[in-house]
Each structure stands twice: as structure tokens, then as C-alpha cells.
Length: 160
Image 1: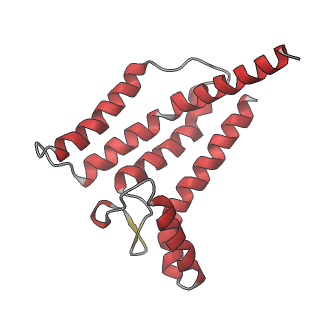
Image 2: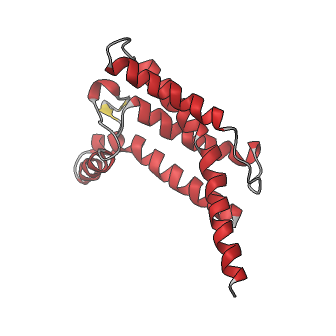
């Protein structure tokens, strides 16, 4: 069960992240591929503002999400890939919430300082804070999801 959940996380993370970076490549091919790229931009617009000046570029086109989101998704994928080497899939213990809080404070601070005009964030700070939160999240989401489904199946077996 644990391995299946991990494989689902890995597969979805690969597909989600790969498509983000393939969209400008598809767009550069033109024709039918541009229609796929257009769909991709619309699809990812539900999760990101996609501002041109805040986005990485590939083949002259912007990736489907901004630099913060791109680095968050890429770091999330990297973390999912590394997860079984860092932590056993059967380990149900979550890391300290201070780790998650620290990542959220860095990200939120970068956004808040920019929004209030105290300190403008930069392409680099957006990329770094996105990468940090992206890398940290799987260490909560994977064991949390494994715990959730293990509880469901344990209770299902108890009721039989």
C-alpha cells in the first residue's frame, strides 16, 4: 500500500512538472502543438498568475507558471524522488512542524514584504522561497496520505 501511494505521488509529480516545462516547447512547434500549449497555459492559470516578467523561459516562450511556482513544483518533484532514500515509506512520523512553519514564514515573508512595499522581492527570492516550500511539502504530504489510507483500510478490515 505504501509503495502504491508513493508511486502515485511520483507519477503525478512527474506529469505535472514535466508538462509545465514542455508547454513552451510545444508552443514553439506551432500548429496542433500550439493548441496543446494554449490548453496548458489555461489549465495552469488556475494555480498561478503567469506574469511574463516573473517566469522562466524555454525556446523563447514562458513556462506555464511563474518562477516561484516552477521552482516549487520542480523542488516538490525532486523531494518526491529523494523521499524513499531519506525516509522509509513505512515511517509514519511527520517532521517537526517548525520545518514547515519556517518554510511558510520565508515564503509568506517574501510575499508580504513585497505587497506592503517594505522590500521588493526579486526573481531570485521568488525562486528560492518556492523551491524551499516545494522541497519541504512531500515530507508531510506523503506520510500524511499513507497514514490516511492505512487508517481507512485498517478500519475497513475491522468491520468485516
